[in-house]
Length: 445
Image (cartoon, rainbow, N blue to C red):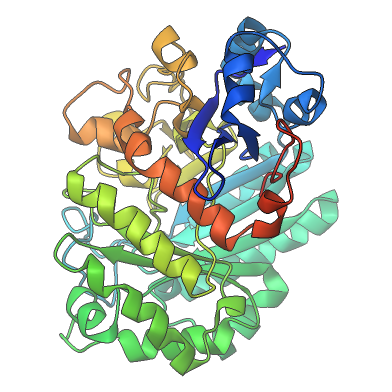
């Protein structure tokens, strides 16, 4: 057996003469002696620990076969899934006036019509539910709750259709949080509401500047109180969009949340996301549009550490690809046009069809499979990026056939992330208890 190519090695922080192995494919960690690592690199596999390392994806029979398996990973995932995830943009209107909103250039107050909503339901029922697919809708905007009537209209029909076809319908909201109070949540839960993404941009004085109402009034207190009302009813993701000049103040948000009763057990995840110029930093963003600017290489680990240290959950590292690669995801805007990424709205050349014409072939226009080159397939970071973010490539003026290489970013941050996981997410006694030189220390988390 040989070492996997999708493996990183870091010095053990508390065991001299030992190293940590981290599988970027499995998210698993093992502690072994430096002597054992040298033997493995030379092709000398010790009798002890081999089985454990193989189970954690760190030793493989054939690295070339592993490389080919990686080439087909997304295709296999696409073939196996039966859950269609669609982001539905109900309007291009909002009751807030966030200065960085990437939709600002084409926001026109447009709302999805009832006719388009009905065609959306018909399409999802005929093309997905009737074919045995579960359907999960993420209602998006603008502010989707300004279209509460359409959420009810769409969800009532999809909920009934799902029951008729023996499949599941669920929906989430990507909302600024000003309109999702307890009564609204209780109205929507019976129709399939499972979760919501709220946004609080740092401590109150920063949030109220970055995300004021259109009138100029601050919105922090309203959002925080609504979040406190619904966090026991549905799963909550809380996002916060930071900038270079203010990210060091953002941990104070985590100290303010408990004052509203929003303790770590009330949130599914806390996501700090950088504001990306001219696009990409929206309420929908989960951090995929990430640059390699020096300040970000410091800010991202800093905020993740602050999150975990206070007991909140941060996004975990796992194999992930740009959403355009996933056949089971789609964005439908308020006019019925199709896109593969919410940030692509407004770029006509990146539209991939519509409710009336159906889905067009987007393999070339969206750079599908741009990572299937030797430079990527042989990179230990491939499972974490699969070519990176198409938006970043677009904003750099490059064709989407080129990859958004994340090597510099992960070179600078991955070791810190792994050590944070060991400190906060995995019992440290599992690492200290290792005695055999090649035993696995910590399973994937």
